[in-house]
Image (cartoon, helix red, strand yellow):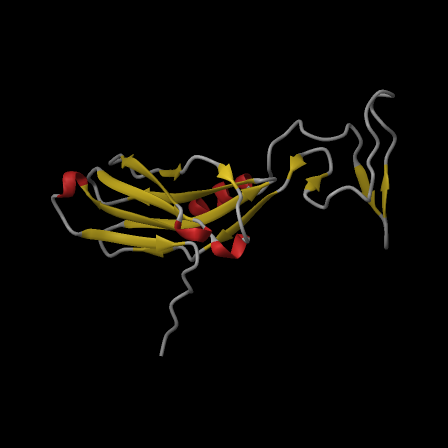
Length: 174
């Protein structure tokens, strides 16, 4: 079950395709050297450019995620704060094995008390899915951002089933 939640995260951290140069890089023992360009008009890879650029893949997406959590009722979730370029947003990956539809609220808390919330209808299907807030311009330090997703029975007719946060620490056993 961990693969179902972790796989979307690996895809999310790859960034967007098509933003960047037309050259690939080949890593040698201690250096990166560009391979031959595919097109003479394509821009060259400049190793002094921002480290946020992936070679040929566009801007990298940084993810800060809390632990994967599972409730006794059957909801699994992991919540992350994502940053790409000058944009920051929250995303929660979840799987609903409760057998019923749920409501979810995903909150992105930014420095200075700013908060963005997204309500997500969680279907009764037992398939991995995700929900995310709109992307907003990053303001302040990235450490000041956190996200929390809360899952409950539909229309407030039941208790909170799971709360998953981006800054949560993994439970420790004693």
